[in-house]
Image (cartoon, rainbow, N blue to C red; front, side, top):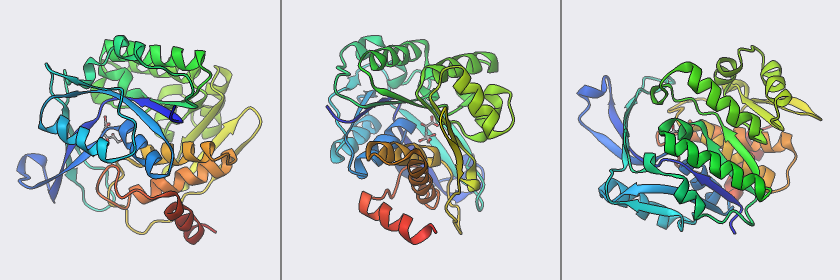
Length: 315
Ligand code: KDG
């Protein structure tokens, strides 16, 4: 088996080539998106093996995503085509310097939102090391949430490490209470929980990185890594804790995808046998590369390029 398995919704993204309100933009650049797919792309670029489970529409965007995945080293045997529903799509604005872009989704009732337990039942989890999941999948539909729970259960039975990026997407949740309940439940069952500082505050009601980490560890999570933007990340396990500074960047182009870059760097560090502290540093490095470019996942470094980047940019 490959080392990592992940599941989620891939989308095509149309990236505005002009600033201003999306309704006035007439030129877009097409790209590939989807938090878990971004992680899979980055991991395979870094020399690790990864399977991706999803459903795609039999439409031009679905075929575009499939062809793209086929051009990477991602294992695609668990990608299913859905004849009935379309592939999700989203629009991303071109922000003025350093701001977060505006995101507009066309994904309701998408092919991937019809991913279900029957798709996960077909998956053999034996031999994988890590299951990587995000809170986005839990928000897509009831059947996606059930599929996610089944993946967690199968991962547990097969001794996989479970890595969970909370990835709050408010637009996809019915209400705040449900969102907190579901995301925290998944976090308590995960070995590694990866919230941003704002997400951690919202989900736990605590304030500092340490308090947020303690809340999750007391409830069953093994390691908590809190992303704090320019300041890097804070990590805590039962045994150790610390803060790892972020990489200094002159020009932030697009923050979307930073969390996925972080997750992929972190997991690659863990798979390479690095300490948690060095794995967090590797996560920071990939995130800092992503935000200097406008795509959600390009251009991603190979392992050699990343090592060189860390060597040159971190003292
Ligand atoms: O993390 C990046 C993702 O947000 C982006 O690729 C699209 O998956 C996506 C989402 O639901 O926001």
